[in-house]
Amino acid sequence: MAINKDLEKRILTTNEAGLIAILLERLIDNFKNSKFSIDNKEYDKLKELNNNSRDILSEIIFQFSGDDEISSRIREVSMYVNKLITEGQLRKESSYYDTSIKVLKPLLEGFQQLEVREKPKVTTGLTYGRESLGEYSFKKERSFKA
Image (cartoon, rainbow, N blue to C red):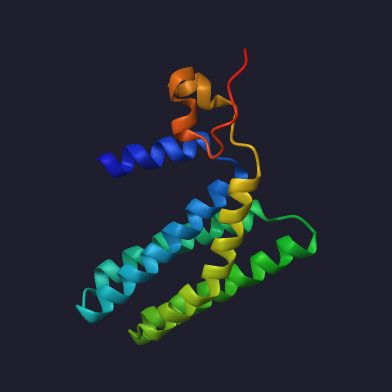
């Protein structure tokens, strides 16, 4: 339950880049769990994880539906990862998930860096009170001003 509360706080206080980073983190966690499911021959769990991963990939594709080159590349990467996890599920082979993780890690790192560089949401102070603003923001020198 504490993990969900921390995740909720992070979602409420991060910026757009941080939200994408959270999605990518979840994808990578799903892929690690998928490898574990294959090793333990838990194929129903693998199917469930892949369905959740496809939902996340769909959300990423939707968020980057623009005509610019970056959006186009992120959509291509998302479709490639979808193909990899489908092959991994069909062949029951964990190496496809290793490849998916390797493909997404640089993208995750980029969005994590953007998350720190951009301003956090203003609702931080409103949500948790002025005294806890520094606890949930990335840069403590910021303060809430009414």
